[in-house]
Length: 414
Image (cartoon, rainbow, N blue to C red; front, side, top):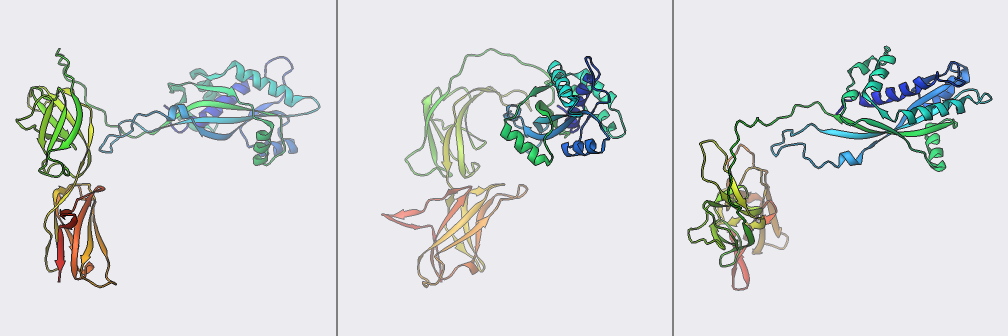
């Protein structure tokens, strides 16, 4: 990886390769030099006679290198800290222009030299980059001493990329100057990396190797015993093969739940506690090794696939205070979660009164306690009977029913 001087270092290296070709036989073009100006500036220099002949290297476009940018490794840990330094992979597109005395065919002679030079040096090696920095060590380019392109793991390669006549016409039109004899090249790949601190894992202090029989855990289905929603206190029934081991746990939303004593190897029963937050989660059966020394992580001997489970919030009986309607909810709304209390009018009130009122909460602060009650200001409500539902992280509570009619939970305001 390279620092942000890498792009300028590539331009300098291309300039150096072309500069080395100007003095070769046969018939060198006397006084020719290599510049890094805009093509319009080159035309102006030629008009006033300051530069009789030469080559010009101009970086006209920069594009992302898709092969390197498709790297799927994450750059951050779940807590947001850096796992590796962010990087950007770039391809550089250059326009090499030859100019000089047309009657003496100087542009053609110079362009032939540049073409052969870049064909003979298609890779910008470490020595080429270092020689370029030393050759063009002027006051304007002394910053290149800090470039670390020469240490990049992936060498930069130069390849000719001829443009169709239409694209070439558009390019020179954008540059705003009459056409000069030229050729286009692509330099790939330049890897830029941010110099941010990265948290690295601690080295392994010791290694413990053991041989054990293979434990295959197959989880086929997850259901709620007796039907109904998955709420706090509900019993989940997990069916499959090889589910029960010497030490078995069921993991839901990061929580470890112990199976019911009645569980079998093809059927596990586990009760949802209020530690399992509402939302859409994965359910997984794991077989664990016997506890090790204090402080050692739990070793997993086998694990099943993960199946989805929708854990719904359960709304208790709403009550009123002098200023609010208090809505109890289980499990409590945990840190980072968002909740919405919806009150829909089912009876009473006037036609002009609102039919639906919503109160949004969250996200709950990380440092704060979970919320087992959600408040709705009485000022937002009018007299009548309101049915109450709570939605947590996109999962809504289910109302109760009497026969075929939804009837609760509800609150009646005089």
